[in-house]
Length: 216
Ligand code: BG6
Ligand code: MG
Image 1 (cartoon, rainbow, N blue to C red):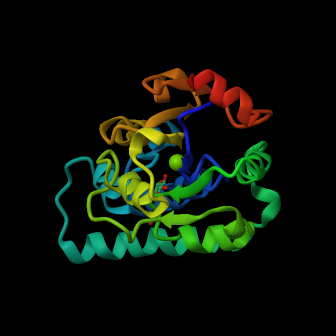
Image 2: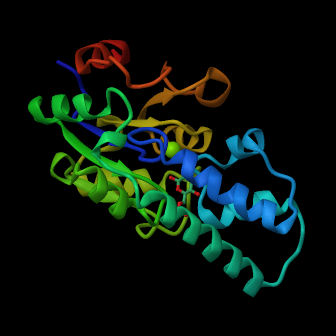
Image 3: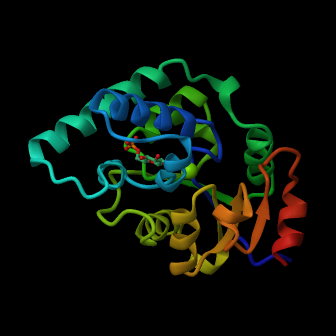
């Protein structure tokens, strides 16, 4: 029998393609401000908190705190505008089936996302009944790559980290999982998530049994 008793899913880019909307929000802000930014630069922002993302875009430029706050609020306004259209149809391929399989197998399931918009997105996707706990951008002070958010989620599930597998699309998320002593699954290219124990291109077509076998 597998030692894995629970799953902790990142949200953006794992269960739903809101990573694209985060990117568009930052791109719009960067264009307005004349900061160089593109999809390639955005890869480093995956999983990173709102403030840390902006600081990466600023690339050493020093701005007054009020301006930083204003820019974070502006990007969030754009993001909130984009996610208005999110619906259950926006679940990434394979994600809903896997959540159902986890429920049927009586394993625990949490969401561990840095986003302060997590609850809104979960509600729009209609998956709240499939998760036992949500840890989000309000739950802890230290963002990924610190393990705090996943430790918070595991605590809510009542499981030790070694019995939980973290599913992530971000380098910072895999780093956080490893730092916290979690099992890890990376979704995406090896260059981004190659340090995870197991790497898949996406959740598309993935069965729970295969995941548990691959993790050993
Ligand atoms: C993460 C995203 O899930 O949440 C990041 O991958 C985002 O791109 C971060 O910056 C914070 O999200 P929010 O909604 O609180 O700005
Ligand atoms: Mg993500």
